[in-house]
Length: 420
Ligand code: PLP
Image 1 (cartoon, rainbow, N blue to C red):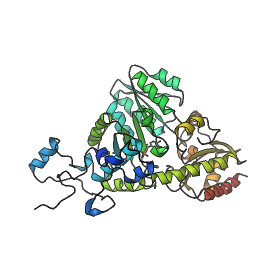
Image 2 (image 1 turned 60 degrees about the vertical axis):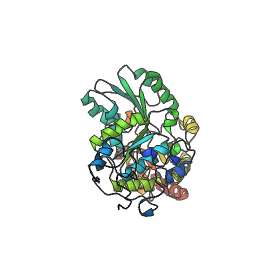
Image 3 (image 1 turned 180 degrees about the vertical axis):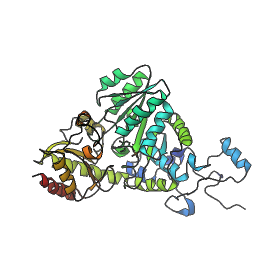
Image 4 (image 1 turned 135 degrees about the vertical axis):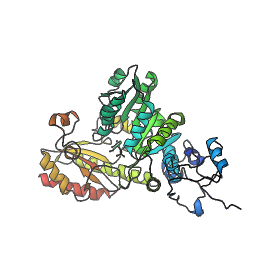
C-alpha cells in the first residue's frame, strides 16, 4: 500500500494556481500585512509536519504511471512536472506575494529585470508601443530602447509626473504605460489612481514598478493599476543575499506571463525561493524599521548645515509629499541628498568616511548601503547627460537598513565633518 507522499500526483502537491494554496490568507481576507507575510500561501500541514517549507531540490518530477501524466494534461490534477515550469517553494512564494499585493496571481522570475522583460515580451507585439515615465530604472528603459525596438516595438519616454505629457504620448499603437513609484534616486511618487485612470480611459495597460515601496507601503493594484512589479532582490528578500523579481496582477493577464516564463526559463531555483519565503516573513517588521530610519535620517540631514538638499517623500519639502502622504503607509528607506559646496571628490570623501553603511549598489537589505550615483551608476556618462538625468556630482544615495536610527545619524554626522 502506498504511503502518503506529499509531492505525488495524489492531489496533495501544491496546486498550480498558487493563490488558492491557503485561501484563508489570500487577498481580501482582511488580515494585516504582517500576518499575511508570515502565513499566506502556506499549507498548514507540511512535509514531515515541519513548520518550515521544504526546499524541493529537483529538476524533474516523476509520474506514478501513464494515467498520472494524462490526468495532468487533461487538467484533472495539479502538480509539478519539470523545474522550468515551477517548483513547490516557488508556488508558496507566489501565493504569498499575490496576497501581499492584493492580486490574483503572482509570477516569480529569476530577477527584477527578468520580470520586466517577461511582462513586456508577453504583452507587446511588433507595431505596438510602450510609454515610460523617464525616471524609471535605467536598465528597464535600456531594454526597451535597445532591445524591444529591434522587434518592432516602439518606445517613448515622458517626464515623470507629467500626466498630460503621458496622455499626449498615448497613440493608437500604445499598448502599455509604465512607471516606477517611488523613483530612484529622486523618490518621485506617482499618483497610482490617476495613472490607472489614464490607462482605463485610453484602453492601455498600466504597470507600476513598486520595488521601492513594497506592498507594505503601497498596493498599486488597489488603485486600479493592471500590473505591479518588484525586484525581489531588494526589500522583499531583504537580506542582500538573493536576486529575484515578481509581477502581480489579474489571473487572465498573468497566465500568459507564466506561460512565457515557462518558455523563457527565467525561473528561480528552489534554494532561492526558500530564501525569499524566509525573507518575506519579516517584511512588515523590516519595513517599519526602514521607514523609521528613512524619516529619522532625512530629518537629520535636512537640518544639517553641510547638506544642500534632501529628497525623501516623507519630508514636507519633497515635491511629491502630498501624494505620498495620502497614498503610502510609510516612505521607505532610501534617502538622497546633496553635500553643500562639495565637488565629486569631496563628496566621495563623505561616502568613504561612513562606517556603518557599506559602499555598494542595491537597496532594501538589512545592511545600510551608501553610494554616489555619479560614480556608481553614471561615471561613463557626460556631464550633460548626467544633468539631464538630474544626477549631481555632490549627490549621495543612502539605502538605509535596519540598524538603530541613532547610530546611523551619529555615523552620518561624523562622516559629514570630513567636508568641513
Ligand atoms: N526595478 C528597480 C526599481 C530597480 O532598482 C532594479 C534594480 O536595481 C530593478 C527593477 C531590477 O531588479 P534586479 O536587479 O533584481 O534585476
